[in-house]
Image (cartoon, rainbow, N blue to C red; front, side, top):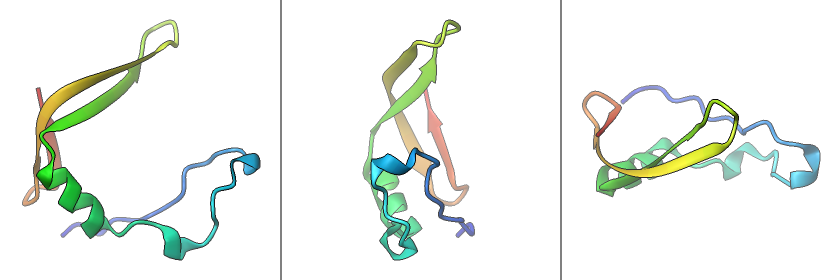
Length: 70
């Protein structure tokens, strides 16, 4: 298994995110869901900055620690 460093996203203080690292998800929890999923959401932005989100089919490859999708 790859050594994954868990961190919080950087958001404004008013969002109320906990600073307690014990509340972060374990990688095993995340990987279990990646393996079970068939549909993933890919998020990007258009050149003018508008968000764009699209569902895609994919597969998590645990041996390579990679997500492949088409």
